Length: 184
Image 1 (cartoon, rainbow, N blue to C red):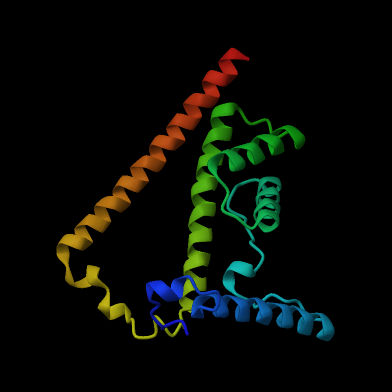
Image 2: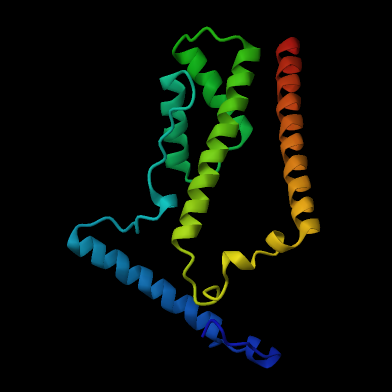
């Protein structure tokens, strides 16, 4: 059903293969949750993205615990301001005696580290669950960047650009917090 191509006329139909697949998947999830409830098991599948996130990358266990709790509760990628807010709150609550520039430095380092760990976890999840019949024929040896030097160069350039943009955002945030602190 997933491989079937739809014509323009079929797209208006209420029983297209895509809509049927959606209904079947929703029904499957309901049955799965009920089965887990009856057997007294958790309904999670054990995928890497569903596992609890553990973090111990900063020098302060209080900050690490708060970041873990934030990510496990929200189930989403935190932005820099979330991490900065957590570090600042921990500084105040636990009397860590960190100055504003050091808070910004810790927030930046932690943000980058957490981002890399979440990205690795997402990539691990993708590698474990790469079994869709639509992509079964794909092989990593068919990666176009392996055979095309120009594409490989462009991808490396984009990565370098992304890293420089991250630096800019970090510096801009540090500057913004200093300006805000100045006017308080």
